[in-house]
Image 1 (cartoon, rainbow, N blue to C red):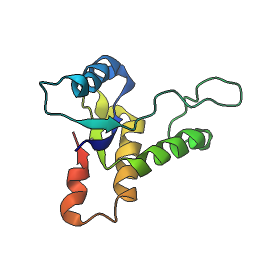
Image 2: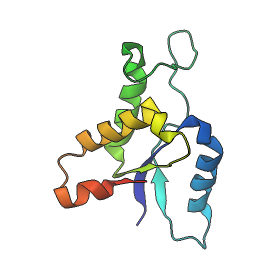
Image 3: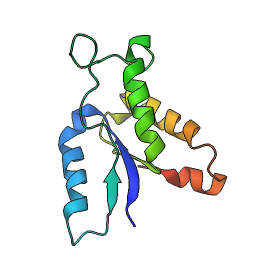
Image 4: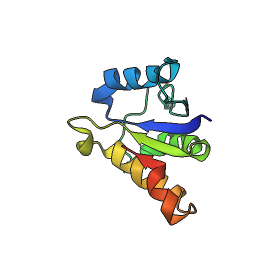
Length: 115
């Protein structure tokens, strides 16, 4: 059965993200998942993508869109690159997903986030 996942990553790793997502189409690979990540950037009133850090109040529409996706995801997959640890958004996604899934049993909560 396919897992419902949200893929978190530093945007400098876009190439690796594309390769990861292609794995689900490979019949010889056991990975099976439904991707519930944002497909398109969240646009502001001007029609341009919102590019504020999660701590900025102006990023609320982006945070809200991600939280809606988290509602449908049972797992958070964090793709780790050289500079992932510096990404404010990856940190926010990990912490928010953990908080939202706090109702999960302690034994399964940790496995809901995979690096």
